Length: 222
Image (cartoon, rainbow, N blue to C red):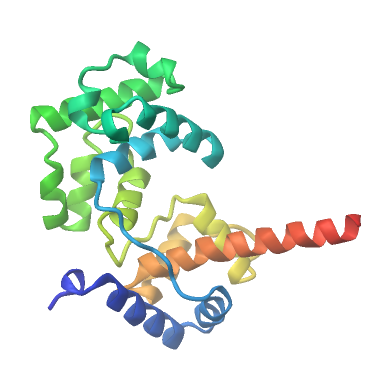
């Protein structure tokens, strides 16, 4: 049985055991954060629309726009068939920027035209998935990596261009500055074949540190 065929909970257990055994900092992080709660969402199209809308805006703003888009869909489900009937101006009335509206419609065209067959993606290797997705205007490598992690549940993805991840690494390992791409790739070799879960814990550690800092500031202000 390959890693991809195993139940995801089993992969999480194996990953956390492995990371704890080979990296003392990761072990401390895992103990502090607790169990990994990553759970892949199989709706690839919805995830891609979500990723496009979420680019370069806050989580709160992205959630509000997605809520409006879903509310405009029959049964609240975002599908290429329904979006094919929309134009950029209609999407803009839902809060989607002009540029992102073009990206979403490009995605719809690729899916409906057969250039991007979403059902094939789970059967492909990581790099081939990235190659297929980045053919769509507005979908770059980072977005494709998020799909690998949060939709397809691939266990060994290292998004070295993700600032939240890099800030988590800087904080967890007490680095003087955010690690550069080459340094991060080298550091990530230690975490193979479970770099996805190392990434998840670095994201979680960043949020943990931010939350503690906010609580300290609040306590001082009282």
